[in-house]
Image (cartoon, rainbow over all chains, first blue to last red):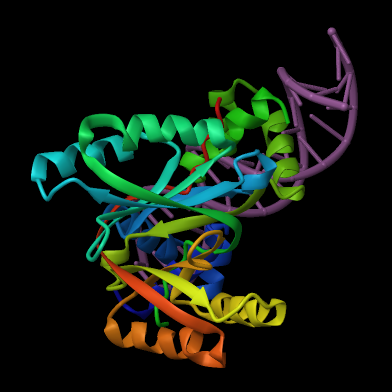
Length: 152
Length: 152
DNA sequence: CGTGAAATATGTATCGT
DNA sequence: ACGATACATATTTCACG
């Protein structure tokens, strides 16, 4: 993982629709050398996947929420089951297991309150794992950036 | 925006590296018709961009935090300036403006505590806009999904 | 890592429904 | 207005230097 790989990642985090030729030109490499690097970065999991980011309000899924979850107790199987439900719930886009006064923070995005309700049933009220939760409703998502700071 | 567009979005949210041919085959369209739709979806902003998702731990930026921010008072210019600083800070990947006991929730991801410190200086302590904040340190990111539920 | 040629994919024009 | 076919252009990909 040298400087060239970092520059490649930097570009692709911004715009994965770049052709290999353009990418190669930008990082100062021949197309074939560039392609080999990109493939290696995918192979070894540094590039996990390429995705299209869709405007939430173009699809009526513009309701974002932050849910802080406190579990009933510290218990491996309990946690594992909860995480499994979280993973299975399409409404939950992110899940952070945190230290401190709460145990999990979920980022939820849904079309309406009915969908939020379904989420509560399928994840929060299911299985007696959750002691309590607090929902912060987002009025606005001011920033959403998938890019990691690479220090290039 | 019909069923076909939704199927296209569904595919591209999963894997934007699909060739137009494969995509067309999956949604049951000819390549040219498919391409026209994809371009239209990009033109009108439904597809915002395509990005590569990079494994955070492959790059030593694996420290995630959730920061809850409470402002000193409700004040337009104050908020505007804060948001501007948030947007400028590469350590802050997401910012939700929420209702309730706190005013903002930030998702931060950094390589180390030193970077977190820089963030505090450049965003949280700058400008006397922030009354207080609470930082929840993530032990683990159990889920990170950019895909919106499309109900297809 | 770079070059060049073969294999693939994209993009366009045209026609049909 | 939208989709299909076919052809021209561009890109990816691989063997070789």
